[in-house]
Length: 405
Image (cartoon, helix red, strand yellow):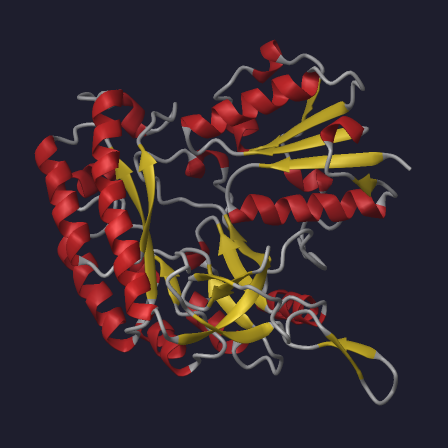
C-alpha cells in the first residue's frame, strides 16, 4: 500500500483542510505515515500570512526535495496563490495544486468524519475575507466568500461528537461573516441533545452582538468561556492606517460590556508590532491600552511586508531591531497578563477536555497538567445490549499553580 505524508502550516482552517485531504487519500487506498522519508507522496499545505511562514515553506520543500526516496511532492495552500517565493524556479520537481479542493472527497460539502491526532475537532464553517486590512494578504489569496449550510454544520457536529470528540472548534477565515449569522448558528448548536462543548476560534469585535453574549451567558456547559478578538494596535492612528473599523474607545466599551456579563471569560487577542509609521509614541499608546483591558493572553506578530498589500507600499518602515525591541515590551505585558489570569483562577474547578500528554484544556482556555488520566476521558462502558459507547470526554479539573495559558 502506498503511503502519504501531510505537512500543515498555518491556521485552523488549513488544519481542517488537511484533514479533508487525508480522508481523500485514505479513500484512495493510501496509508498515512508520520515520517516523510517513508512517503510515496508528500503534501505540503502552506501558509503565507507572514515572512516566517514563507521561510517555513521554503525550508520544508528543500528538505523534502533532498529525500533519497524521491517522493512525489505536492504543494498547495495560500503561498501558491501569493507567489511570495519563486516555487517554479526553485523546485522544478514539485507539483503545484492551485485549487486545493481538487484534493477533497466532496469539494462543495467539505465535511470530515474525524480529526487525526487531535482530541478536539476543528470544523470549518466559512471561507474567504474581503475586509482588506492594509497589512493582510489573506483577502488576496482567499477572496471567495463561502459559508457551509446550517444543516451541514449541525450534522457534522453530531457526527464528530458521536465519533468521540467532546469539543468542537468552529473556524473560518472570517467566521463572523457566516451567512445566516453566527448568533443564529450558535442558537441551533446549543440545542443539539449531545454532551459536548463548542468554541469559536476567532471573531471580530463588531460581529459580537447582544444575542451572542446572551447565548454565552446562558449556555455555560455548551459554549466555552473564551473569545479571541483581534485588536492589532492600541493606537487610534495606527488602527486607522491598518484599515481597522473601530477605535480604542469602541473596543474598550464593547469589551467592558462582554466582561460584565462573562467575568470568568478568557479574552485573547492579536497584536502587531512595528506597523509602517508606528512611532515610539504609538507603541507607548498600545502598551498603555492593553494594560487596561482584561486580556488573558496575546498572540504577538512582528510586522512583515506582504507583497501586494497596501501596507507594503507605505513609507516610514520600522527597523527590524526596533520591531524586536517593541515586541519584547509586549511580551512582558503578555507574561504579566497570563499570570494575573491564572492567579485569578487558581483553586477553582472548571470543565475540561483531554488534549494529550496528561494535559487538559478548560473551557476558559487554561491548560491543566494532570498526574493521572482522568477517569471519564475516552473510557468505554458496556451497554446492556453489549455495544460499546464512549462516555463524555468532558470532566472536571482543578486549576493549580502548574497550569498554563
